Length: 258
Image 1 (cartoon, helix red, strand yellow):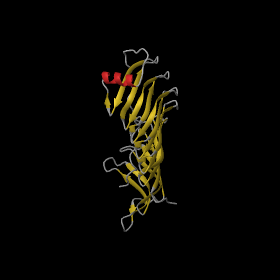
Image 2 (image 1 turned 45 degrees about the vertical axis):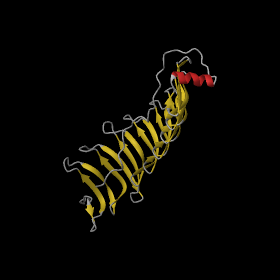
Image 3 (image 1 turned 45 degrees about the horizontal axis):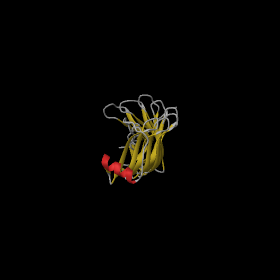
Image 4 (image 1 turned 90 degrees about the vertical axis):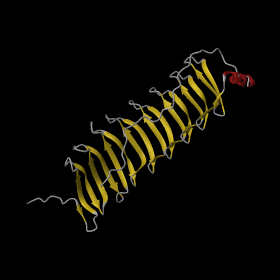
């Protein structure tokens, strides 16, 4: 019995894609994507390929007439999973996981309407937590913590509208606070202390109205508040600057069907 090839790349009299489609690249003649449409809306499983290759770039499972898609993305070099997550109306939504080229989990993020919303985590290769932060409408909001690879706390504090706010601390691996003080809307406020790993104060700052006090002003401030310090060293430990979530391979928006 003669087998018939599946018809493909058909449109109806309204110009809407219907049935099975395979789009090919005009230059390389390789498949760009393949999947099934109903009234121009993707249905079920679609496969997308890296340009000029047969290597899978992503796989999408479309539901609810294409409004929702569960997506898995792949690295070209290794074929390992790069990212997994969900789109609603072509915007990232719910939990997304990101992986390195060996398939090891790098980070987890939560999205709503395409924006980060909720807890974001980054992990070390051994699976231990590297950092945990909170987002609201794509801005850092609420408490954060950074960790050394052995699970000891590296830094902690809080954000308000993507700026440090309240008490923030950075620690040496032995638990001594290398730098500690308060922020208000991203601006240092009040007394800041910097210490060596043995716990001795190496530097101090006082901030008022967004301005650091001079040595003379600072001495008067300490005297007025009856603040004294033990013997201080002259060397200053390097303050770890704010670092954002480690970069992961960027994930494009939901694949185009043009």
